[in-house]
Length: 320
Image (tube, rainbow, N blue to C red; front, side, top):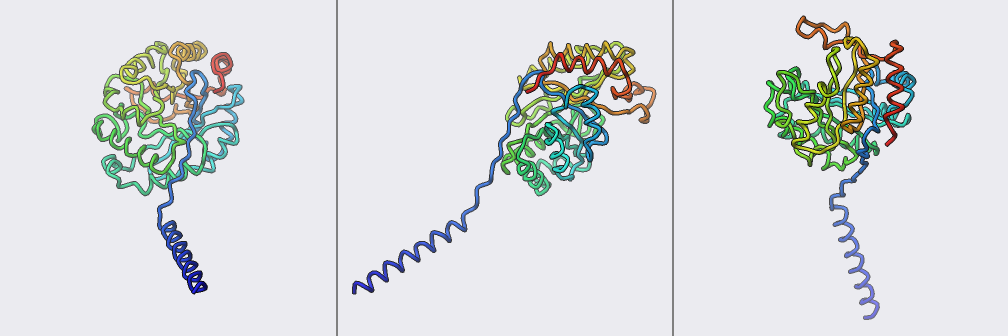
């Protein structure tokens, strides 16, 4: 009797263990979460966009030599449905930088993004960023308050853009990709632009505000290029501001002085820093109404501009 009782107890324990194990196997695994926040420290970010990076890092290294400092933000533009560029991101991290991706939905429909049609792509991208495991800055549909992109003003209702932006951020959060700094990127306020507040997704969905703006001509100043837009932004958010795409062109007639004005303005408004658009656009097709918008924005080869830029970087920008 005792033997049979022991056997029965052993059997019950074994069955219970199997049942518990089975339930554990059937339970959904919790989504891993990776968090990596960038400090919102004023005047601490130096970034660059280089036309041949990716795939290689050499153009960025040349810019670093010119600036006298390695950039801690290295940007590239990504088309819709392109995967996260981990090999290049690894290169950027190896050199002490943070990858900054501007994802542009040129061949996607914003209502479809908002309704979840592209969620498989977004989840895959989010998982890749999460598995990267380090900070990544991501913008989506940059300069949407201007009219020259199909996802922007006069092409798509602002409410549709906002819905798409919120959906993208929500998908990334659901996949645990909380190592993303979300950069909501507007263009400097220009005649014919839409009201920037209309495109605002809300503080829950944005980490930093990016403003793209250029010194095109001799009458440009920081207040003229960025000041008005910053004042508009400050009416609805106190989020940190990055000059997310900027340069001083030869059309200003005095790049040395204008570069000084750019850095002085950053000090005045306490921006996070800047991302220099180091690209030659002088041969881009242009009409009489837009001739000044495409210039050679590179600093390399202009001794005065190089001297001013490296000097102001050394005087103004700290490390975060």
